[in-house]
Image 1 (cartoon, rainbow, N blue to C red):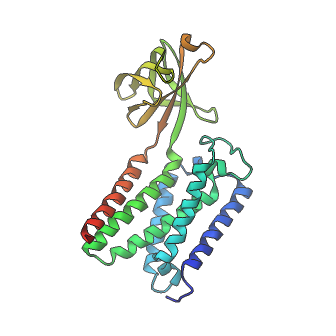
Image 2 (cartoon, helix red, strand yellow):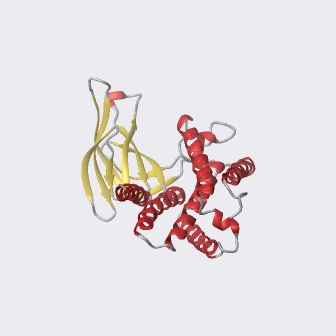
Image 3 (cartoon, helix red, strand yellow):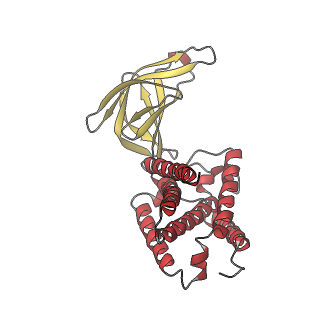
Length: 290
């Protein structure tokens, strides 16, 4: 490989991706994740895997494809993703589905084209690295592969799975059972889980009052769960996490209404699997090198 293919080219590619993403952001607006929901995200994943396999098979004839599996390509991509992630961390983000509060879009980074495309590029590079290492079986390569395959799985599921994540809000009155919830765009969804509110209470504590709800959760498959949902103590039922979100603040302790936030992310277990593989591969590789 010639000297010209190094980190300088990697930085140029990353700058081009960010610039292209900004152009898309200005012309087309934020990423519309709803359009990428199941099953389209799985189709995109399949096409991406086929594309990476074809690029890997053609790496002997195409210098770009060989370079994509090198550190010279990977380091600038990781730095770009890290900088954009830091920017997300220091910027007040708007809830998912809401319009960004700034004209550029950095207050909604998960729908910000430069952010999404940078992570997709990093995902492609990690996939190419994994395919390259598969052709050189050894114990050390196996540990490296576990680590990088974990990174790949976490990136894929965290990116494509974002389209299938649901964040809904359900308002329930004491003595009633509710199956319906609304999203950030006020669209009504009928859910496979229902919440019956028995009692809402504000519990006084030494630091701050905590509000909680005594509920029974039903599923269409017949599961019945009775529990108390408190602030920062959600209830997990069949893939849904139910958070105590709000109440009728005008009535305070006399409120007979409780508002719950229901979150479902079917790809999250695979993200955790990827993170576990990444950590396990890194620890095992460190132990072997000792």
